[in-house]
Image (cartoon, rainbow, N blue to C red):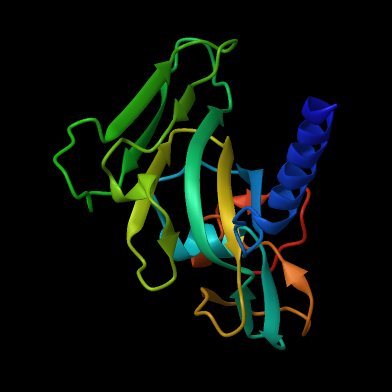
Amino acid sequence: MNKIVKARRNRGHNSLRRIVDLPPLTARPMLNHTYRFAADNALSAVDITEKDLLASMGAMCTVNNSTLRSLYYSVKLHSVEIWCATTSSGIISSVTLEWGSDAPVANTNMLKADASISNTYPCHLFCKPPTGSFASFWMDATNDNIVFTISTDSPCIVDVNMTGILLDGSTSAATVTVGTASLGVIYYPPLDGSTDKLIPVGLSTAT
């Protein structure tokens, strides 16, 4: 009998402990998503910056026909994948992605490339930020360093997987200048910012 009573008491104590010892939580909401962008033409050294990434995840119009403000204050880039359109057989087509040079440690693995001479198998790259490069860490709107640069010989599709932390209060955010946008509406700007070459697929955009 004493063993049964003791067991019941222990169960009650453990239940109370689970209630009182609340686990820590990440306060700010986070969202992970793969965004798809399309370029109708070849790309020549198109730079993608920290603010470009933040804005491309979603931005609200705060000044009518003028300004968009990012919904996120911090972003972590996980991967970039590129598919290029096929070309005529025998004609060389290439794609390159070069990571930004602002790295805290030396890294020689900053350039990725692929080429094709086939009209069946297009150029294709799948890249993750190099270990030790600033692109592998959380980024925010306080800086606007170049995260990566894309060049292609033909139109392409670019998938970017990233996680964003939503704004909280008056935290600084990336802003985008546009020509046409309605106040209070959420848009998804081009990946390359003001050059408007990599347009989001399936989402409302503003340029």
